[in-house]
Image 1 (tube, rainbow, N blue to C red):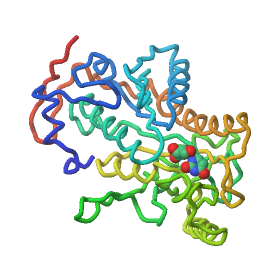
Image 2 (cartoon, rainbow, N blue to C red; image 1 turned 45 degrees about the vertical axis):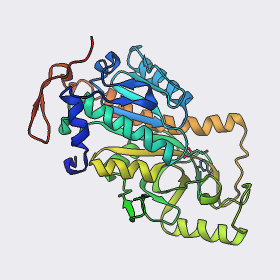
Image 3 (tube, helix red, strand yellow; image 1 turned 90 degrees about the vertical axis):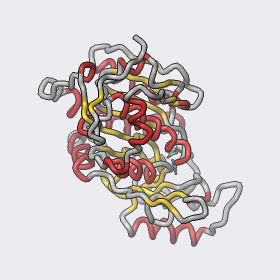
Amino acid sequence: MNTGNINHAFLDRILDGSQTDVYYHFGLSSGDHLLERMRRVRAIITAGSGERIMEFAEKWSTLNGGAEILDFPKDDRFTARYTAGILFASHGMGMPSASIAVQELMRMLYFLKNGDLEAMDKVFWARVGTSGGIGLPSGSVVVSTEGLMADLKPYRLLKGADGEYWFNGRFPVTTCQEIIKANTDSGLKVLSGKTVAGNDFYLEQFRLDGAISFETPETKMDWLQLLYDNGVRNIEMEGAMFAGYLNHWGFSRFAMICATLLNRLEGDQVTSTPEQLQQFSKVSGLVLFNYLKTFFLEHKSKQPLPKDRKSRSRNQTGKDYARPPWPR
Ligand code: R2B
Ligand code: URA
């Protein structure tokens, strides 16, 4: 973990109880009893839609002998569920929305792990989603090696009138390889490649079918070809930020797994039937679960869960924190 990039000034005050943190978009605060039941979290799985999150949580619960599913109190912005060591959370569409989810999830995780950076680094993060493929048959699954923006540069944000904040969009190589390996015998088409995140489904993905269009068939094809030649295999709307923030904090295990809904070299509109779309969206979930089953289910007995509830941990400021006082 990269302690210099963690906002200790704010987050440590939550640990020592001098302040409560409000995870506003999830409808929860650090004083909520619900969090106390999530201390053993080992993975944070995100996806765009709340419906998928509920499906994932149901499936993981079933695989864990019907483990209890904890509901978050609010779901008008994001939907979140916790079951059997995994926190599942939706993030909506696009980097502005997903960045809110990722920041609040990180704040929760810091609190849940008592600021213990070693324990936090053991947590696996993933985004599972859909995308437009480049030169791939629909239903292929891309495990991203790097998230870039439409100009093939990493994620950045405006720093007021004073320049930009830049992030590193690379996904950890080992995790990407492990996911692909866990799916070798699945019969699914799973491959690695770079991913571009557009800030608009239409303009920044060079579509010709938006209500605004600045491109011609030639400029669109030139852009798609440029992406392909640079190793990009799919286009979505969150990956550059997702990798950028997790790298910033220094996590070592995170991934993005996206199914392709169409081949952008053949068109812009998503014309698949609802049944096909459901199948495409299902395959990225299958790829994720084949990995989760390998690393979080089958290895369970070999990797005892940390005894979070009783732990005292030393954070990077060197201060020893007792478990903070929350209502029981
Ligand atoms: C993939 O699909 C959504 C747009 O339809 C967006 O959230 C994304 O990244
Ligand atoms: N999601 C995207 O962002 N783009 C596509 O083309 C398909 C899904």
